[in-house]
Structure formats: C-alpha cells, structure tokens
Amino acid sequence: MAGTQYTLHIHLRAWRKHRGLTLEQTANIIGSKLNTISGWETGGRKVDLDDLKKLADAYGVEPAALLFAPPGGEKFEAMKEASNLIEEMSPEHAKAWLDLGKVIASKK
Image (cartoon, rainbow, N blue to C red; front, side, top):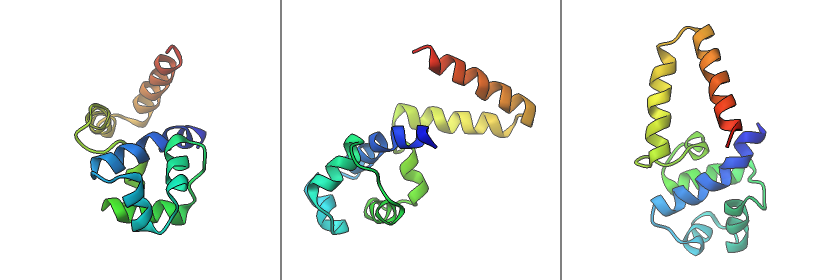
C-alpha cells in the first residue's frame, strides 16, 4: 500500500484543480484547515479515511476515485486502457504483464 500513499497526494491536488477549487474553498467545504489540505496535497500529512470521504464528497466522486488521476488526463486514459486490456487476459498473463510493468517503472 506504500505505492498508493506515495501517489495519493498528487491525485488529491489534481482532483481539486479538476473541480476548479482553491485550497481555501476545499478547506471550507470539508471543514478543515487550509494547511491540512496543503499537507495532504504535498504528501507531508497522511489522509485518514474519514477525511478521504469528505474530499470525495466535495469533489463529487467515490473515495476510490481519488486514488487515480481525474478523467481527461493522459494518465487517466492510459489507466482506463490498461484496465480494459487486463480484463481480457488470463490471470497468468495479467501477472506477467504487471511484473513487466514493475520492471519498466523501476528503470526511471
């Protein structure tokens, strides 16, 4: 789950901007402090499940959506395509494909 925490902050900022909200507006909507929202978006603070739900409500999405980039972005479209591909694969091929992806990602 470390990988999820590693990218969650990036997606939180992207969702806020996708919805056209400022840090202050988001803080007011969910009843939090501006520096708390900022900490979540920079990765300096962990987001608990209750706050993740509040953010999802503020952005009009299910909490699980916040683990991914908002629609319309390049990564979102790639993830959607990858999801469609993996659905068509056998479990063995899906695992091999994911293992290959991990090797490619590690060579950044």
